[in-house]
Image (cartoon, rainbow, N blue to C red; front, side):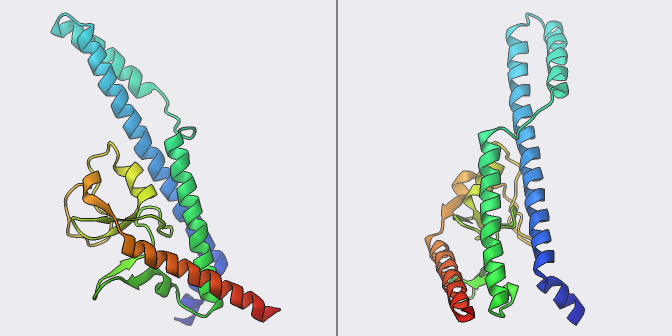
Length: 211
């Protein structure tokens, strides 16, 4: 058991897990954007086929040709602003999470104390976004189930993708996430800001003690 705990207290291994999580988040965002672009291209191809066809036979022929062209076209999303913004948000949040992790270990506190914090009453929530696995910076609460996501993570994912449900393990809410389901949570924002302030203060105090 002690070996298991030691493994996960190793900063290098935790950093590696964080890097893997960021990589998976980028790949997920890339695939979603490709689906979005292909969907828009197919809609345009169908409209063009309808507008340029006088008979059903003509439509079927034109649609077949244009839809096949869309399917064959390679889609590169790496230069899209939407993808770049998502990547910047994920990497920035991951960097903040690393700071929290490092200070938590330096002060002898467990990772769980940073992950879970109390909100109101007996309610608990994760400080880490369920998609990016990075520290939440702009908390948005899902009114349908109460779970918290980071705005820069959830909004690009649900935009034009109507089949996205709450990703929190065990969530009973089966409704697809809509923009009007999400509200900013100022209480959680304050708690996260307080946590980061404490981390910075603790880190400064540790540096002073070492001098």
